[in-house]
Length: 334
Image (cartoon, rainbow, N blue to C red; front, side):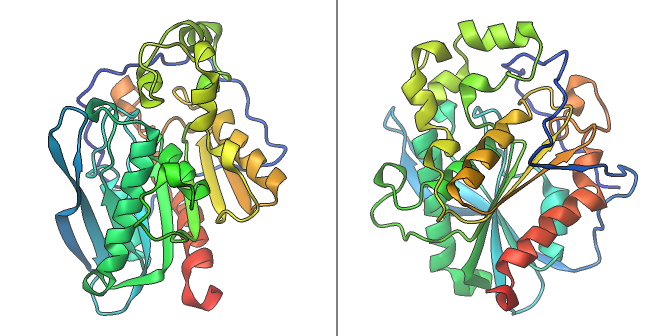
């Protein structure tokens, strides 16, 4: 069984739902996983590189910050598809050490997996900055494809929670100048995985009890700062909410998407991933969504619910992820 990830060091800044509405499965698949049947680990030797600086950015106070990544890959010289992992953290932190066991499993499955830091609200960042950072990381990794043993024509994004939001937003905004530097290559991403990410932030509690819904309706949160409107409740900033919503940029030309969400997610309403999934399908894009029966918001053991991360590291759930990546990135499929 994988080790339990380290608990977060910050106090949870958002309400935890007491009730969650049953998920809408009209366009999604219910996945009833066995949490005792866990993903495999250790069958393949891995090489690792840590704290690689991929960019240096200037913060609003004039300070300079180095952005770093950690990379894992099976030992050997073969060029492999690249999976860029984007950690969660409520847009308040971005710890590239997160989800190590899951990243190791994906790497052992035949991928270079790079866990990437991106700027968040304590850096004075907005969603535009986070997406630009991801694109800078992609450009760096492609530039050093020989060093990392990367097949630069086979790249996917995989994010959890806030990282899922950033992954989805990066995947749908390719070529838009407000989301990338002109010097960064476009058309880099061939697949996107969004695990329990937010999307339309003003609706983040729509599946929850009234107290949670009222909190977001009347109070500003760190999400408002991430939208570039600190101190403003969502009803006052609808344009900013829409600008950060991946669904607003859905077209038929975006890469294939895989969404996963827990039916009992107490922090991000399950309908958040469905919102983007439906927009992509309506636009003619390739999108698949799974709802994990009984699963919460990733590993929320820090809320006093030990073992909640096990459905997400089950063989069944991780098999969905690695299967999607192989179908979309393997050379025989391109």
